[in-house]
Each structure stands twice: as C-alpha cells, then as structure tokens.
Image (tube, rainbow, N blue to C red):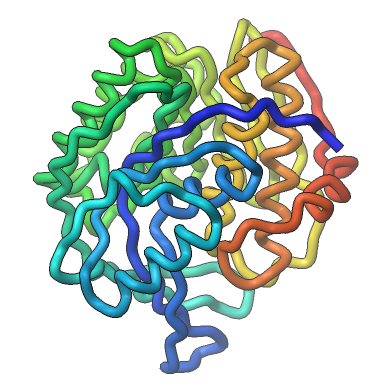
Length: 308
C-alpha cells in the first residue's frame, strides 16, 4: 500500500447536482457532482485536509451537497450561498459513457484564505464561465504569490465555453500559471484538433508547468516532465460507467504527489491515479473507491518511460 504524504488543499470550482439516467430511461437519480467537488471529496477521502471554495444553493439540492461534503470531511468554510443549485443532466449509454446537458450559473466572487494551503486545484466550468471565472483566476494568481502548488484541469464543456479559439486562449493563460496540468485527450481533440496529444503536452510544458498529464481513457495516460515521456497503462476493469473517471484520476494524481514533483514521485502518482480512475469506472457514479480496491489495481498500472 503506497504511503501518502498528507497536505492541505484548497479546491476552487463548481458544485452541482448530477441528475443521471441509465439504459435509455427518462428517470433521473440525483447525486452530488461537479468536477472540483468530486476532486475535493476524493482528496478528503484519502485523508488530506481539504477546503472547497464554491457556490452552493440554499435549496434542497444544496442541502444534498452540503451533507455530502460533511460526510467526507471537506471544510465548508469557503462555500458561498446562492438561491439555486446548478444541475447537470447526464445520460449514461450501454457502454458506460455519459453525455451532459447543463443548467449552470457561476458568479463566485469569494477570496479564500490561503494560509497553510499547500496546493490549489481548479479548472472545469469555474475557469471558463463568467463572471465567476475571474475570481477563480485571481485565486490561482494569489496561490502563485503565496508559493502554493497550482493544479489545473480544463475539463472542457464545449457547449458552455464559447468558440474554440477563445477557449484555447483562456486555457493556455491558466496553463502558464499552473505547476501541474491534467487534461483529457477528448479535451485536446476539441481544443487542438490538428495536434497530437503529446505534442500539445510538450508545448504546454514549455509555457511553465513542471508536469503535464494527458489521460486517454481506457488507453491509460501519458505524462511529460523533466525531459521524459512516461506512459501508464489503465488497469483492466469491467466498466460500469465513466462518470467522474477524470476527476478520480486528478484526485489520485494530486493525492499521491503530495506536492513532490520529482521523477520517482510522478511515476508513483501516475500509477495511483490510473488505479483510482479504474476503480471508479468499475462502479456506477463518482464516489471515491475504497483504498484497498485502488491498491489491488496497482499491478495493472504498468509504466514505460522514454526521453522527451
């Protein structure tokens, strides 16, 4: 069982309720969601100190989110009340893939306290939807000044981010301020359709981050760092659905890194992240998997490293 170095995280981004239907049904089940919320909950489940800076409605769905955060030990001290909770309708097909339709607003204007924070993670809609995106970016810049590690996952939702050129410019602005970037191959196919994923990762690494990781679904992940390209296989599992898989990978990556970006730490973190994502895919929904289950999948997270 890998030993995790416990650190203090501030996660900045949206909290919403996923209304999920399966197998062609028009019945929807409500479950806590939002990429940043999923990451915050996953990190807390691994034992880290976590605060979530977000908006949560004062309605019934907001109560669901607050209860969920409390259950996993995520601090609610940075939450801002809003009249209504945002929702995402998700339909899961027979292969376990989800398509989304959002009812989303983001007007976050908080200025969270960074005292004692080791790592700030943000991304997804929080960094793409006005007017709250400006506050999220301000937290990133404050984190850099404070010496905290900055992690970023674009997690693109094309229907909500505007035109491709504008979205890419916004993403690369944040990439320049990040230490760790995790992005999916699906995101890159939309953002940079004429470039292969490793080429984009190399280009982004040259902008300032120390680690850029591209996830490739069932094909695993590839990381560019320290003059190296490290590929990690995805442990084989029977997929129930892919809801929250990318967030689980981010959780595992940050949880295992513990702020350490040395080569050995990155290799270990890639394996842990891949196993965490695989475990989430093996069950419906995005809840953090038991640690023992993640550990049991580590042998399937095979590493291969070459020079960049």
